[in-house]
Length: 86
Image: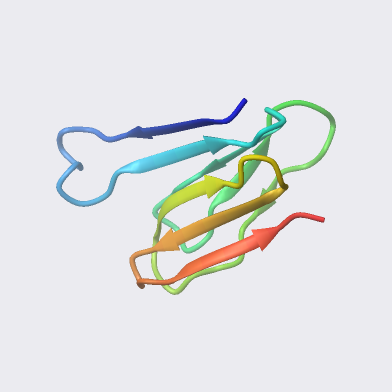
């Protein structure tokens, strides 16, 4: 099952909203941040957390492929990165 959440606070909604997406296995949580990288938290299992490849500006959107271990990140720098975890 795939989950995608968006949330923002009224004070910051004019600027950034934060998003998080849970992968199809329910094991990895990918979140946006005010950083150029997004953390990937290991929700289940003993694996360690990861970070995405860097953008040149803050990451504003994240999403997982519905069945593959592949995700995308989008940034304020108008770039999108598609990455596969092998």
